[in-house]
Image 1: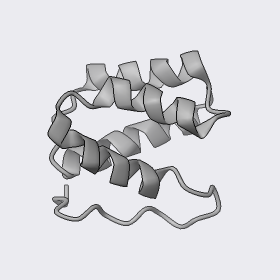
Image 2: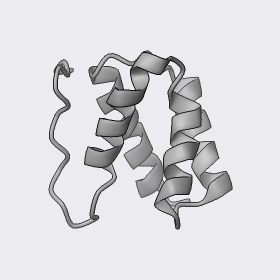
Image 3: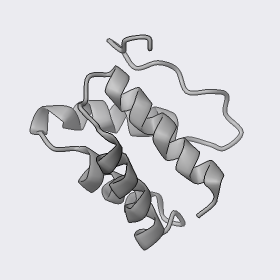
Length: 89
């Protein structure tokens, strides 16, 4: 896995934290490891690997879904917009 992808996972985790999810560095590390395990060739595999590592409560699911949709879109898209209700760091 490239450093760029790991950095993207860290940025994704920051977006989730800003939306209210409680994520420590261990869970972010687990998310990167999960992507290494399943690969990123299939979007569904990447979605569920990240979901398993980063979502721990049912009420986090809609936030995760929206963040995933916004963050992991076409590679040539501009920076992802903030999630509704996100706090600025």
